[in-house]
Amino acid sequence: MFVAIDLNGEKQFAFHDDKVRLKSLSAAKELYCPNCQKQVFFRGGPKRIHHFYHEAHVECSFVGEPETQEHLGGKLAIYNWLKEQYPNAYVVLEERITKTNQIADVYNASCHIGAAT
Image (cartoon, rainbow, N blue to C red; front, top):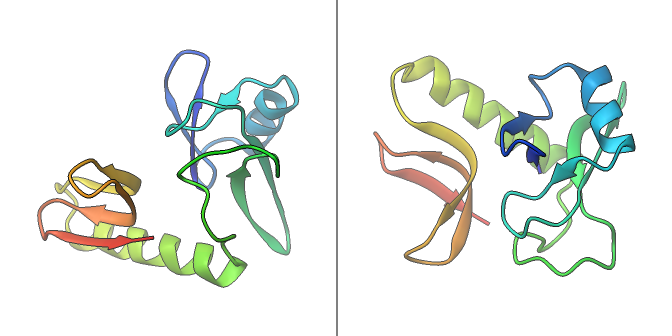
């Protein structure tokens, strides 16, 4: 997952924000899942895309099949492409679609594009 919420309810993005700050928030246990509000952790490095994750035992409808590095990279590439093509559009990662109770990997309200997981 690329999006977490901090103690102030602000979204934190694993690929945009200061990695040192995110590691600090993670170590202080101050990052939460935007879906279930349970604690998440930050990880990544030179060989792994930076992302947030739940502990293995946590029950959350956001957690389905584990995402491979290829899947995370593809999701990020689609997000970045849509942001570039539609700079004024509502393009988000991991958007909950309440009507279908699904979470879109990438959602663009302007184009009605959403690839649900």
